[in-house]
Length: 212
Image (tube, rainbow, N blue to C red; front, side):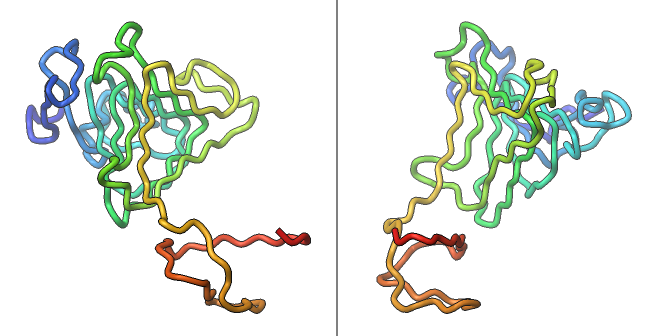
């Protein structure tokens, strides 16, 4: 069993905890095995109380009255992600977070839609501190894939119930596009553009037959 203290911190109504959460809310880290105790079978572990982390084909639940801070890089094919509490993506410059699953469901307790902390929430960054790392949600599966954890709906989907929140704050370049300063020959590793850009060094390429 987990130790009584040390692996989580408490927070209360003045920090966004639903007043209906008796004894306050718990803030814990994804990297702690104790965060997931009681979800062992859903995570694919031998027993309900087994210690471990979400992995391949896991059904992950962020419980009500809890905030889980995703403090590690992750790139694993899970099955479902159901959020009753808060999933906070830690704002790290080097963060590489790829959440891959068949379904994501941000839930809300009936009647708590307008109560802070009453509904599920996924958040990365803030209006004053945009997310610095790389974050992506990749939905996988086909039209016959069914997840009981997400309500039994077939097919891949991302659902946010009324009152649920998805808050993603990223860096927005001041200049969205520019013209090439010189022709880029086939196989070139460097592009020269007009003006000073504040883009991240990641380039996508495409071909077209018509001038646009």
